[in-house]
Image (cartoon, rainbow, N blue to C red; front, side):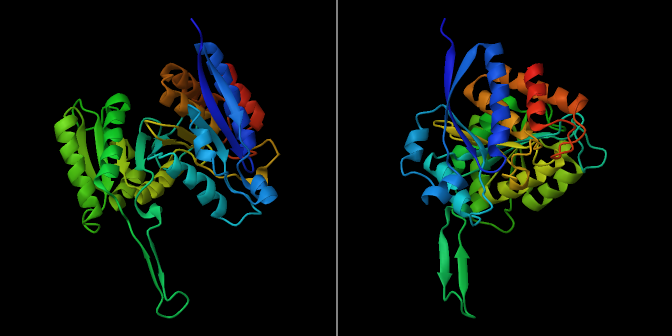
Length: 361
């Protein structure tokens, strides 16, 4: 029987991106050999150096090119010599929108041996997932200025959602909860999906979200328990009682904020991985942290977020056992080897951390 082959587009990007991508690919190749599949990778130079050299942020055919692949493996975008926003909007946001990656998937999971700023909380308490709607809301750029630069200047930016956008995100979250959720405290034997919103103030947009949430849940997902939390309360509970959470679903802006809060509770940007998901198309997986240009070329950056992105990518592609093997290897390394997750303080180089995980796979 022929090996299953996955075509992967690799975008190392800027700063330390190429270094962490190299370690992510090292681990992916190791797990592919163990579990009997192969990876066919193609590298693309999208990023700051290309922009400075050519003046082009992203080729016009980039999205069509990416559609030829099973997934995209991204390092980091952000260059110190390029004005902030140019690359982020021109590459990351454009690919997300052009490829309709309407889900941002963010596990918030504390691994053994990793420090958290939350007192008396450990891996058993910090273990949940945020499903963020990724292409609508305030990020669509609907709005503008009038009388800009005067004392009467007005700026408007609108949070816009239609039922289709909301429903497809909610259905993804219900399906994810059914497949990967845990038995949440106080909910009997049901996995729990909680909607995060602000229905007491954003009485139009989150009224739509809440109605759709309960209608879909009641009709199609009776096996999933449903909760609702205001976003400000969610932030408090993420600090005080993260063990309450199973899977959270929310809109674009709120999701952007709470996932960064979640990242710091799980040990920081060096361990946080995310997926930009199109369940019917091509998805892109990236570390949450930036390009960290001050560490470029020093072989001291933490590659675990990129390695965890590889696990997320394999889970999405259906290689769940291989994905679990990577996560278990990472947990072993954080629990028994690393002194810290911070760059230069791990006790090992970037390449040595990749070797440790690959060996354990």
